[in-house]
Length: 492
Image 1: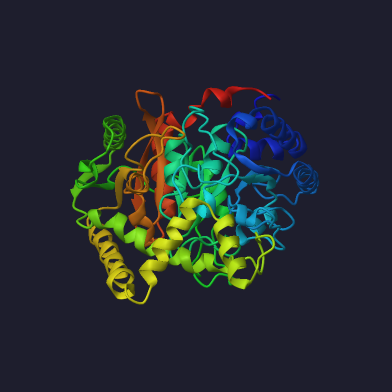
Image 2: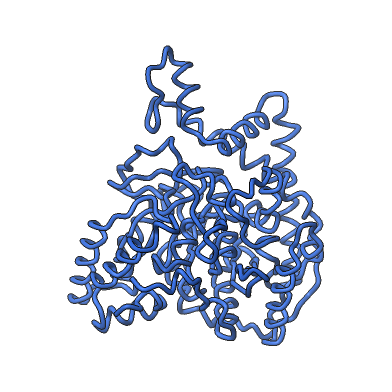
């Protein structure tokens, strides 16, 4: 079969169960597509072809023996921020270019236990710091919809690999929008779960109180299958919540759009820099949901102007602390021929980290320094609580909150946005991480240049099933999620 890459996760699961094709055939099909197409997209950092075929053979044996899960034998790509035993894990950085993890992240271990086949590790902004996937030490990943545009970041490789049909779905991480924004830029569905819903063990830390893993796929249904694997308590992660996990696939029709109260924050639709095409497509999608029975409710989120400055104090502060471990002594990049210990520290870090990572370390170190800790970091944490309370007040009157996922469509590669311009591009996503809420991106159309536009729906705590269900029903009534970039239509 030459069109296996066009099948949904449910169709792949049924095809494997009914012996319409084997996991080895499916895996080989994707590996051939990667070999043919990825030189143009540059989504993979490492392709694990030999291991993938061995896992596929084991999956075929499990299916034959009747020991399969719903996902046994289906290929997956992992963001290169998840540790993978025996495979290079780089976080997109020169600092970790030689690091081979001795253990699996919990997300990776769960994927293996479910019988998923690892195709490889995909590109990302260095240490997840960026919105374009251009800061990677391994070069920029391209957007399959327009190869001269970025796929978004930091999970740009995860989005590009799915949009180009080089993997059926992928894992991503979201610290300030890094699942939702690339999903928006690449015309995909991406879910950022409630903080603590997915284990962070073995996920290389950027900002520990904000980071959260989640799925990127074509549809809400495909995301639900992967969430069934990723979600759950993990004793190895002290921030993991011991709370019963939903069956996200079984609950896909559990929330009726009819009567659903969707909050429309007036501040979000008056943001300077919101592109006219993006605003129009998002408003059209909300009109469609209204036609399906949803109730649109105007609300106020009065802390909107505080999102960017609050995030860009807290996240760099945590990053400066987390990245202090990369000192040239324990593991990772080590400067050659240091003259003394201080020289080893300085050169290992200045040579191993890229410009954006160094910028955020410096900002964070400044915010945590003795003279400024109370004035900046402590104040930012107080504002963070006010942002959370702003959302909770809104949820007293609405079920979900709607917003664009990004104010624009994908930027051109090399657009040379200033740091401030890049940071402002995250205005719709940052607050969700500051508050620890779940949110999802759904594709809702295109701009005049045929670049994808995304709608973001934000839910209250632990409402992942509701968000997936609402988007699933929207996708049953529309076909935006089925659209494919020209490069994805190529047969291997």
